Image 1 (cartoon, rainbow, N blue to C red):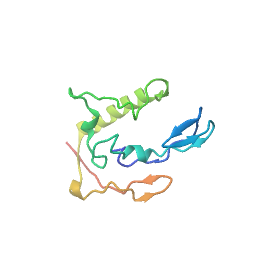
Image 2 (cartoon, rainbow, N blue to C red; image 1 turned 90 degrees about the horizontal axis):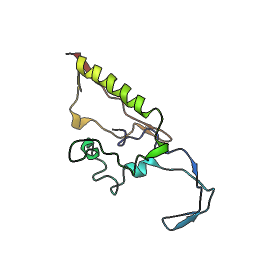
Image 3 (cartoon, rainbow, N blue to C red; image 1 turned 90 degrees about the vertical axis):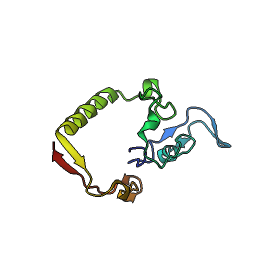
Image 4 (cartoon, rainbow, N blue to C red; image 1 turned 45 degrees about the vertical axis):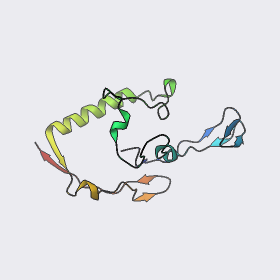
Length: 134
């Protein structure tokens, strides 16, 4: 879901550490670049059918999560708090789903994933969710 609507489509500015050739242009060392994450998140060369919500694209043949190295850099650039964040999300979502039934008041096909406001940040549209005790 975060891939379909990137809340912050422009990444953190970076400076090139060496002279780089990119798409036929030579960029000298020290040039500031502003990565546009949306261009990668919707690139058909990276994702087959990029406009489609399909969590299975991140699973291998055995149903285990596969880390697409083109999107998530391995090694020292991984967030230090990633393990804790994953554990917290798992515990929170598990507790909610065990205690409640979540339903949408409108059919899934009527929901739009287009941002309500798009600029420096993409603001998602408002959604309604019915939470019912199990």
